[in-house]
Length: 597
Image (cartoon, rainbow, N blue to C red):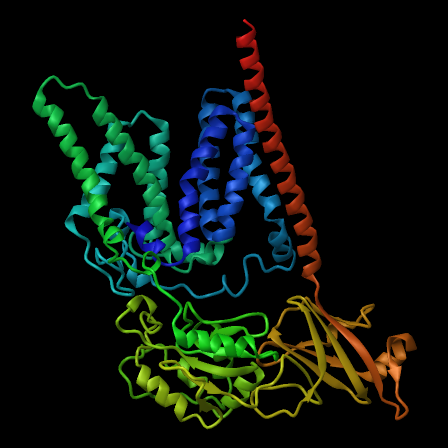
C-alpha cells in the first residue's frame, strides 16, 4: 500500500521504487553466482534509479551493504576465506561503478562540503505526530483512506491489514532455518523501526540518526522507509506461500483450505489496489491537461528577457513555469532562513491574522511580507511577479491549497491586495491572481554601500551576460571609488571574481549580505595598484573600466567528475556489448558444430 501512496506523489519516486526489486535481485544473484556482468549491470541500473531519486537508492545501497555483511559472516563461520574474498569483490564492484557514474555531482558536493549539508538536507524534522508503530507494522500509510490520500490526517488501520504482519511472521516461522528469510526479516524489522519515526519504542533514535548519521538528514519524515517493510514482508509472505504449497496433503479439504488461504492473502493487496484500477486514486493515474491560466503566465515569462523571480503563494503548482531567467520560489520552503534572521531584528513585528484556515505555526508566511522592510525584501530577491494559483475544488489533485495548512484563498488575496508596494495586474487569466513588483532589482548590480534589507539602498545597473548557471561575465565602467558588486544568489564561499578572466580577486572581499546573498567589495585603487594596465582601461577623468568573470569554482570539479562518469559509462557499455557478442558468436559456433555433425 505505501508504494501506491508514494506513487501518487511524483513520477520520480515511482520509477526509483520500481527499480529497487530489480537492483536487489541482480545484486544477490551477482554475489551468489559470482558474475561480473551482473555486478556491472547492478551498478548501471542503480545509477539510473539514483538519477530519479537518490534518496531511494541510498536506502537500497544500505540493504546491499547489509547483504554483503550477512554473506561474509556466513562464510566466516565456515572458514571459507576464498568465498569471503569473492563476496567482498563482487559486492564492492556495484558500489564502485555507481560512485564513478555519479562522480559528476558527488565530487563537487563533497569537496565543497555540501554533500550532507545543503538546503535540502538542513531542513527541520517533520511529521513525527503522523507516524506510528502500528502503521509501520501493518504497512499502512497514515494518510491512506483506502481510496485516496487525505494529507496530514492520520487514518484508522483497517482490521484486515493486521493480516499482513501475521502472514509475514508465519513466513519466518515456517522457514526459520532459511538464512535469507532471516535476512529479509531483519530488513522488515529495520524498516518498522525507522518508519515509526519518533513513536515508541526508542522514540529518540530517529532524531539522533537525523542529526548524526551521514545522509540520514535527507529523510525529514519517515515515509520512504516503508519501502524496507514492504521488501521484507514481500519475501516473508512469499516464503510462507512457498512453504504452504510444499505441504503434502492427503485430504481434499486441506487442499482447498490451502488455496483459500492464498486467496485471502491476495485479496488484501488486490482490494487495496482497487482505487488504482477504478481511477479513484487520482494524481499520477489520472489524465490531466495544462490549464489555460498557466499557459498565459508561461507565455509572459517566456517573452520576458530580463532576470526575475516569481513568488508563488502559498505553494508551487505542478504547472508553474520556470527557467534559468525566471526561477520560482515559495515563502514556506525558501524563506524560512530569512524569517529566522528577520526575527532577530528589532524592526520585525509579529501580527495576528483573522483567519482560522492558517495553521498556528504558519503566520510567519504572511509576516515576512508585512514588515516595514518587506518592499526591500521583494526588491532584493528580484521578485517581479507574485502569483496566487487557482483553487480547483472540484479536482483536489490539482489544488495547491490542499495540504499547505494555508487554505483561506480569499484571505490571501485580500492580504496581497492591501500591500502598497505591489500592484494587482490583469494578465488575462480567469482564476489565477497576479501581482507585480515594479521596483525589483536585477540579479547583478552595484551599490556604494553594503546592501541591506532594512533600508532602501540606491543601486546602479551593470551590463552582465549569463553564460551558464555557474558563470557570468560583467562589465564595470567609469569607476573611481570603492563599490559593492551584488550577486543576489544564495551565498556560497566558492563564488569567485576574476579580473579579465585571469586574476582572481581576494577572497576576503567576498562578503555576505543580511539576505544571505553574495556581495563583493571592489576598490579601483587596489586594481590600479596590483594589476597591469592590461587588466583595466583608464579613462580621461581618472575612472577605470574593467571586465569581470563571476565563476563558481566547484564547476571545475563538475567537469572533472563528468569526464569520470562518461569514461565509466563508456567502459561498462563496451564490456556489455563485448559480453553479448561473445554469447552470440558462441551460440553460432555451437550451431555450426551441431550442423557439421
